[in-house]
Amino acid sequence: MNKIIFHIGYPRTGTTYLQEKIFPKINSINFIGKPFKSINSKIFYNFEKKIFSYDEIFFNENIKNIANELKPLFKNKINLISHEGFLRNTRFFEKKHKFYKGNNYSLNLRRIYQVLSLLIKKKDIFFLIFIRKQEDILPSYYSNFWKSELELHPKIDFLKFINNCLDTKRYNFSKALNYNKLFNFLSNFIPKKNIIFLNYESFFEKEKNTIKKFSSLFGLRENEIKNLISSKIINSNKINRYYNFRNMDNYFPKILRKRFYYNPETQEKIFNFYKSDNKKLDRKIKFLNLKSKKYY
Image 1: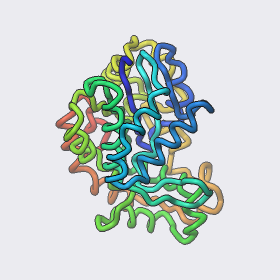
Image 2: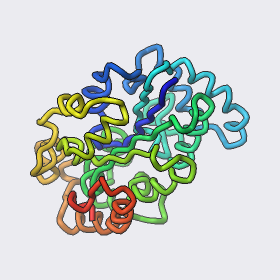
Image 3: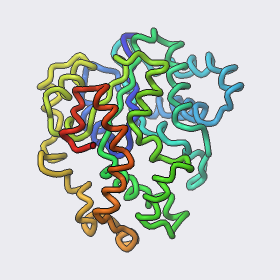
Image 4: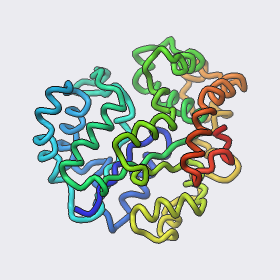
């Protein structure tokens, strides 16, 4: 086995585009999913469920079996798994709208690394993480949120959703959006050179340093990746129309339009909540150049 790259998200950072338009077209790699081929789907579903649901004692007792069950997915080349679900602390299993309230995301990621370490040398395990400005990612997450949780919690409007997210006493998705803390956590057990952070804005704007980092990870020339990125996804002036939150009437279903009001004060509140840690991350990974993208 040559290398394992685990793309863990974030959700709402162009993951679907990567999974459908870019990763499958890199012919030199073994792209396992997502989306998963039918033969891979059951294997990965069982792996995912065990990562989320096993308590610590049971997980440690069964880790070798978990690794052996996952092994058939890999080939003697660069192997890529893309799945953003592990950055959540809950997951749908079995029945629609039935959450399995599982482990927090940090435990999920550590477990993934432990399993992969039984299949390949640690130096050949890479975590790929795309990030995006939190004041853009949270509205995007909310817009996707309505498809599931909002049916269960119809009274949650956007402002209430944001207040819940920024409540430090809660555990929720927004805590995982502290990119600096995620980097610090992963650095405890993964070599820093094997933790690849890229920002959404720079990647889809095809900025040289970001494309170079991405291309080298897969052993490709920069032009090979640039040619796969559609110019329609993003331009240098604004987020694409799908994520232009100043024009919600063209995006949200009617049920959400009454609940969504993204005023400058709310945007600033989100920005201020994360800016200090974004700045710290920028100092650690200089090529990200987060200041130029107004992460802080």
